[in-house]
Image (cartoon, rainbow, N blue to C red; front, side):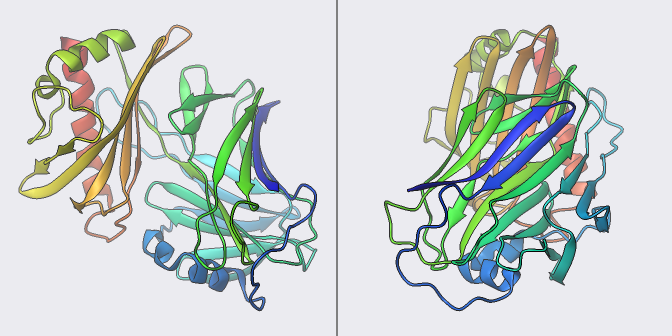
Length: 350
């Protein structure tokens, strides 16, 4: 069966994410003994702890019968960079903080057999893991993002962005799911009008419980774009390194699968061109980091040129796996944002 774990919608000023167990939980394979949610998560995804960024700026509190997470806006004095939006996330179906280990926080509701949500601050935003045991009886877990009325979901590669009035209020990231053995489960978003459902396929493989389903919210950095997206694309196709300001970039626009030996100040930033996509008033290209990248293998970055209504934007969404203090800090992040400001400035001046 396909268990529908997550939906996300935007209406009446709220972006709502919902995890549901449609038709109950199908049991297959072996199920281990029940244990605390963070331990279950670390067993299923051993390296996930490396992504934790113990930021004192992110607040997780019990309030009004729910759990509320405050991800503050980020302030940078960089020309062309629009205000970096934060978010307030409310977990409506959790009302207590069960444990906090290594910067990760487990929350739950009144149903002791229900799913547990583990919150993990990262350098890019917040991971939300729902740990579902074999006896799960709760029908849904609900998340609410506080955004302006009229906010809509717009596709952004494999992600979805929360957008209103020329402002991106963060990105709902590509979903993932694994079982207790660490086996990746087929997972995808399904869009219905202004809602997203995260479908996890538990039929095609033998499943061991608990299952861990992951969603995420990430900061999106947006800059003023003065060219039409298709014009920006044409400029990059004509001479990529004339505009892309990182040493090691080729003159010709790199094809899918190409390895780019990028470097900055002698440090390796090698990436693979994972994909490009072109549509009306839209163009993006997407890099994934190789093992020879300071951000860490598995990191990625999405560059988008888009026009929504009359508003033209250049946006950057990054996922950094290396959360070492010497990489994931304000100085490093400011340097990257300055570089992308130069990138869009090169395009705007052409």
